[in-house]
Every structure is written in structure tokens, then in C-alpha cells.
Amino acid sequence: MPPQPPAPPIDLPFGPGTAPLSRQGEERGRFLFVDAMRGLAMMVMIEVHTINSLMQPGYRRVTWFGLLDFLNGLVAPAFLFVAGFAFLLANERCRDELGTGGPPLMRTVGRIGLIWLTGYLLHIPYFSLHDWHQLATPEQWRQFFSVDVLQCIACGLSILLGARLLANNERTFSLTIGLLLCLAVLPAPWVYRTDLGWLPFGVAAYLRPLGSTLFPLLPWFGFMAAGVLAGRLFLDARQRGDENRWVARMALLGTGLSAVSLPLLFVLKDQLGWIVDERPHLLFFTGRLGCVLLLLALCHLVCHGKTRGISLLRYSSRESLMVYFVHLQILYRPFWEGKSLVMRVGQQYSLVASLGMALLLVSLMLPLAWGWHRVKQRYRRASRHLLHLVLVGGTVLFLVG
Image (tube, rainbow, N blue to C red; front, side):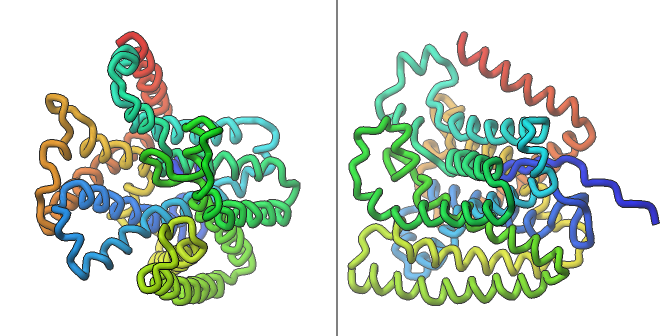
């Protein structure tokens, strides 16, 4: 039997690098359960944005909406977790080459930079430097410097890459990531109560919610760090041929964390009123991490032994950065006479109509992701040149427009 060729370089927008070698249960070097988890999170994220933007506020007072809201709230933790998990998997083979400053490091830095740039592009109020300088309000400046999930991911990946370069062995790297997890989660309540006015707004927004910031590093980077540690345990178990036990441990840990943290958080916050803002609280983190670990185990069980991806999720996962950017442009960018789709429609839809709009948007994104993926696979060099052309051309138009 001839030796198996190495897996080709692949785009992991939220975990840049090169994937491990192909084996049973993987497709061309990709772990299918990672694709499934990220693809599922991507589609639910589209539903979240559509519901929040178009649904009548009165539906939020319906009793059962709390369950939907909680499930929707798992999207960001799952997205961040899988970013860390994918980072560990993607850079496993080339970890020795990263320290040499060669092509693997340059590709990784370039992809992180693309995520960071995309995050800020989504906040640009005008596609012209002149208009921005002349027309932008202080609130639009604060919106631009606010930290959304892409900025959190890009900054988090930069931290992970720095730890990867500095650690001289796997044990040191894992201990460093564990320490970073604690530093992201444990001080969060204190930082959220601290006045960070002595820091520039664009820096302070990475530490606590300021302006429209939803995902500061504290505590959200903790989910990325947890993803790295779970990925390390997965690779160790896989090397021992013990994946089933790893899945069982993830499911057991996830069940324990969620079963203890979520009811306790409900009592302390909703019954006793001892917790006003749950976001920086340790129970908020552990409860949602438990749910994410359960989802991880479920995705592995569903995808285990398959040699082909799940078609509904595969391409939205592989082109998740593009899908994320495009669907937000459709919803929020003021293309129609200075108004966006959300501004024209307003929060006027019923829950059913909002879900229908979300389904329509998903049905548009899936073929778009499929088409772009096929173009990238068939015309690799041309697609890279096209991306560079768009970036350079867009920059020129922005500066001279």
C-alpha cells in the first residue's frame, strides 16, 4: 500500500494553519466533527442576528422564548471554543516550523490579520475616508472601536500563537494556556467594575464591555483557551487509539459543569438577585462551557467513522469568515438609499416570519459558501490573487473616495 500523501493546506478562518494527516473519520485532512460544530454554530448565528433584528420585542416576554434565547446564547461560546480547538489541530504538524519564521508562520499571521481586518470593516460607518472624517459621529467612532466576536477571535489567536512560539514543549504550552484561561475568567468580575478611563477606548474595549462591545477578552477568551486544552486532550487520546474514552469524558465533564452551574446561576441571579450582570461570573462561563462540551461530544458521535462531511454544514464551516461577513452586510449595511434591510423592515415580524427570514438567509449563504469553496479549490492561486486585489483595491478606493 503506497504511503498516504500529506493533507493539503486549508483555510481555517478561525484557526489558521495546516491540518493533520488524513485518517478514517477525516476528509482531506479535516476533522469532520469540527466542521460540523462550526457549521452548526454559523447557521444558528444567522438565525440569532435575524431574530434579534426583525422580531417584535413582545415575543421576548413569552415564557418559552427564554429557552430559545439561552440556546442562541451558546453560539458565541461554541464559536470561540472551536476557534481554539481548530488552532491546536491546524498547527500541530507545523509547530516546529512556526518558530523559524517561515511560510507557516507568515500564513498564520496573515490569516489572523484578515480576521482582525474583517472585524473592523464590519464597523466602518462609511466606505470613504473623506466621508468618515467629515460625517462620523462620536458614537460611530465608539462603534468602530468596539470589540465584536471577530476582534476577540483575532486577538485570542494572536495570544495563542505567541504562547505556541514561546513554549518549548507541549507541557509548558498546555500549562500556559491553562493559566491564560484562569486570567481570562477569574478576574473578569473585578475588571467589569473597574474604571478603565485611563486606557484608550479601543484598548479598554478588549477588557470589558464598552460602547457596543459584546465580546471582550474577559471572559470570552476563556472559551478559546478551553478549546485548545480540549484539542490537546483529543490529540493525545487519538494517538493512544482512545478517542471513545475522550468523547465520554467530554460528555461527562460537560454534563457535570452544566448541571451544577446553570441551576446555581439561576438561583443566585433570578431568584435571590445576588448577581446583577452574569456575563463575567464564573458560573456563566462554566455553565456554557459545559453545554459546548456536550455539543462537541455529540458532533463527534454523529461524524465518527464518516469519510464525507455533512453537506448542510461543511461549506458554511469552511468558508465561515466569508459567510459571517456577507450575511451581516445583507442585514445591516445601508445599501438601499442610506438604509439597511433591518432599518427598512424594523422589528415588525412575528417569530415565525423572523425564522422564515433566517431560513431564507441561510439558504442564500449555503450555495454562496459552496461556490466560493469550489472556486478556491479549483483556482487556488487565482483566488488568492483575487483576495489581494480586493484588499488593495478596496484600500485605494477608501483613501481616495
